Amino acid sequence: MKNYSQNIRIKINRLFITLCFIIGLLSLSGCHDEPDFSNTPSGNLKALSHIIATRYCFLEEKGVDWDRITEEHLKLLSPNTTDRELFKICADMLATLKDGHVNLSSRFNTSYYRKWWTDYPQNFNLRTLEENYLNFEWNTTSGMYYKILNDDFGYIYYPSFSYSISETSLNYIFAHFYKCKALIIDIRDNGGGQLTNVNTLVGRFINQPFVGGYLSHKTGPGISDFSEPYPVTYKPSPEGAILWERPVYILTNRSCFSAANNFVAVMKDLPQVTIVGGRTGGGGGMPFSSELPNGWSVRFSACPMTDANGNSIENGIDPDIIRGGSEEEYASGNDPILDYVLSL
Image (spheres, rainbow, N blue to C red):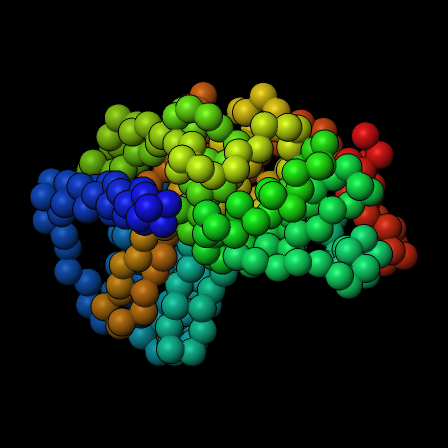
């Protein structure tokens, strides 16, 4: 019965998100005629520019002059531009959006904006964690490392929301921590994954439904053409599940992106939760894909998400307590962020 309830909730959540995309795309295609672009270097770049101009959801928020950027990159083309040269020019144009959810994919390469995390300190070292804090001994389920630290702290390291979380696995984890006074959830270097896993995990820390954020979709080609925000409601885990009502510390760094960023935004509003570490990397738009005349695909942020107060989460979320450390500290076997929480 528990698994049935979980599956129904996951399907409803996926259906809701899918409907937002369908409504947005139908409204875009129904409001105006889509232009045809030729399969030439300039035609493909213009097609890419048009997709971003009409469907990308953060142009206004980021203050991007997309027309100017398009013109600058069109000037770099010639009739003899090769596919690899065209790819680089298009990728450089997309990089001006500074969005890790924006990718261009061809048969020979995929572009990716890496500076959202490479320009910041890492504040994490997996080998240091495994060797000096977990002593190479931990339990693993649903992609989570878990262990009791210093007798008082239940510790979970969750490296990716791409790992499906089962209600049964969470029951085993929280039963293992029944004597612990507090819980640490370490999501440093978690690049995101499935939002349904966010719903499952959040459900263990609430005893009644609450609105954890809002989602909108594009209703037209203009940069301000959005629907009214839809509330995203989170519900407690199914009856019989073990809930955690004691203090929770969530460890973050700049490499927390997309679904991990969303998890922090939702959990930060809960009274028993404290976020410790660095500002998250952001990624507050639901991604969608389209195609250029030459068959290359472009992935982009299509539906903006906010926190419960209506604040954009695209550019990351500040922790409650800022902590970091040098590369030398991590290399020498110390984890200043984890040490701080364990000292409380």
